[in-house]
Length: 489
Image 1 (cartoon, helix red, strand yellow):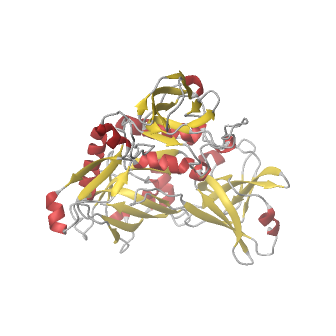
Image 2 (tube, rainbow, N blue to C red; image 1 turned 45 degrees about the vertical axis):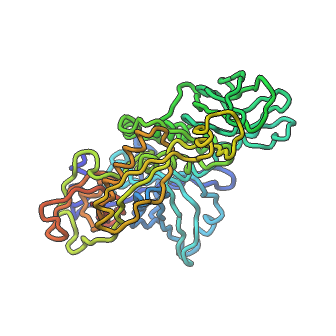
Image 3 (tube, rainbow, N blue to C red; image 1 turned 120 degrees about the vertical axis):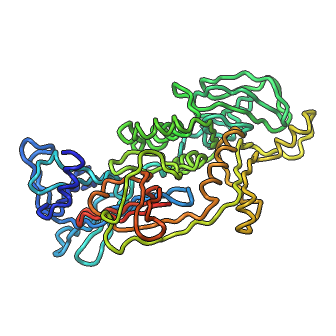
C-alpha cells in the first residue's frame, strides 16, 4: 500500500479503523505478550503473528505527542492507553510488571490482513495505573527512557583507596581531565574504562611530564613521582574505530553503554537520519565523565552543542534533529484545505536574542594559582573553565534594548571556528521574534514528521503568500484521523 492509498483510506467514510496493540508484561515471572485492540480483530493462519485474537478492550485517542523543545534541551515524550476493566476482570493486571517493557501499536482496517497494518508507535510502558473503578491506563514513554540510565557503573575494584570509585569514561577529545589513580604503588592512572585512541599529554601541576602510555587499557603510568595534581588530555573511547562527532558519539553511547538489556541495537537507530546528520555536522566534540552521568543527559549535551535534539520516530528509531529555519529538505505545502476551519492559532512567541555567547573547548580541571614555570598565558588557560565565542547584532541590540552580554550557553565543541559558526547560526535564527502556530490537521498530515520543512499558507497571520516553517509538535488522533500540528515560523 502506497502512502497516497493509505491517506485515501484514512479519509474514506467507510474506513473501519482499528488500532492493534502488543504489550509485554511480566506475569507470574514470565515475560508475556498481551494482545489488545480498539475493535475485535483476529489474525489468519498465514498472518504474523498467526491465529491471534486481539481483545477489543483498548481506547486510543491521542496515543502519543511528539515534540521538539524551543529551549533546546529535549524531553521524553509521553502518552497513555486506556484499558477497559468495568467488572474488575483485569484487576490482576495491576500486579503485572509493566515497567520498561516494550509496547507497539499499528493502525489499519478491520478487514485487512495483518501485514497491511502500519506501525504508529514503538516504545515502552512506564507503568500501569488505575483510572477510576472501571479503567486502567498504560502510561507510555518513548524509547529514550531506556537511555535514562548511568553510562557505566563499573568500579575500579581491587584493594586501593579508590576501589569503590567509578571508572571514568572519555568520548571524543577532552582536555586537562583528572584521571583516576588506579594504583598508588605504580603511579598508574585510568582515563577511560577501555581502549582509547590516544593519551597525548599528561601534566603535573600544569607541567608536561614523562609517562608510559597503555592506550589499549585506557591508562598511563608516571615515570617519576608526582608533585601536584595530575591531569591528562585524551582522545577517548575506541572500541574499534575512534569517533569524535555528535552523531557518532550518540550512537556509541546508545549502543555500547548502560545496562546491557536496555542498550539500543541497529534496529533502534534511524541510520539514514544519523548518516545525514553526521555528514552535515562533522564538528569534533568531546565529553568526560569521571563520576556518574546519565546516558540521555550526555547525548543531549552532545546534540545540544549544535542546536540539535534527540527524538524517537514513530517506528521507535533514534533521530537527531537540529532546530533550524529554513528547515532542511523539501517543504510540504499546507493550506487552508489541510486545516480544520478556525483551528489555526498562535500559541507561543520566542524571545529575541541580540547576541549569543557559547562556551567551548572545556578545561575539565580548573587549576587556579599554579606556581610553576609554565608561561603566564598557559596559567590563565588552566584557570579558565571555558573558552568563549560571542556573536552579536548591534542593530537588534539597539532596537530591542537588549544587554550586549548574553547568558553563556556551554557546548562540547572543541574549535573556535565551529563555535563561531554555531553562534552565528543561533543568532540568525533567534534575532527576530519567532512564532509557533498550532492547528488541527486533516488525515493527509498524519504522515508529517518532527523537524520536517513545511510551507504554511493561510489568509491570516501574514501567511497569504506562504511562510516557511519547521514541524515542532505532532499529536495524532488515530481514532478521528486528525492531527494537532505545531509549526515554528
